[in-house]
Image (cartoon, rainbow, N blue to C red; front, side, top):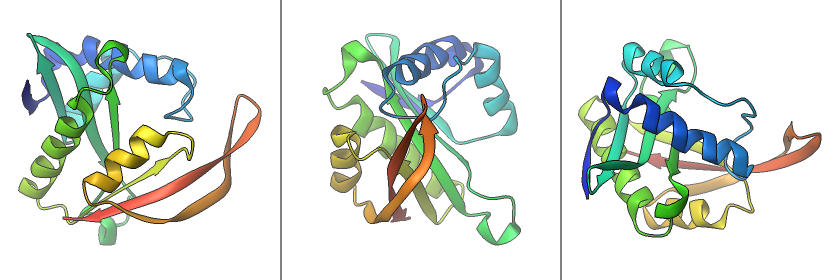
Length: 158
């Protein structure tokens, strides 16, 4: 297993894995598939984005987006992590988040936050095991496929 910063050549693999997460409906409110060009734009923005490779193939990734545009929040990143379906449950998500934490610390961020669907027990367990604190629950945060969904808010100080 190798954890490294993402490169433009990884964009298609990252988009493929993200689209699996979108299809599964347990990790994001996004409903439209992403393209490699969408991912390349993240890299052009300079977002912290890491990939995990196994046997030369990208199997997981994690990114920290800007939390809010206000200068006061410049050191807070809102993170996401996705693992390819056949690679789930094998520690690749943990490696991706650990790599992202290291990259965010290197860049001077002081906090990572995320919102996780309560039924996404694997992600909640991962966050807990890596020292994220559950802050609370946003009730009826948004609709996905016409249904209101709650989210658990997590944070970790870096």
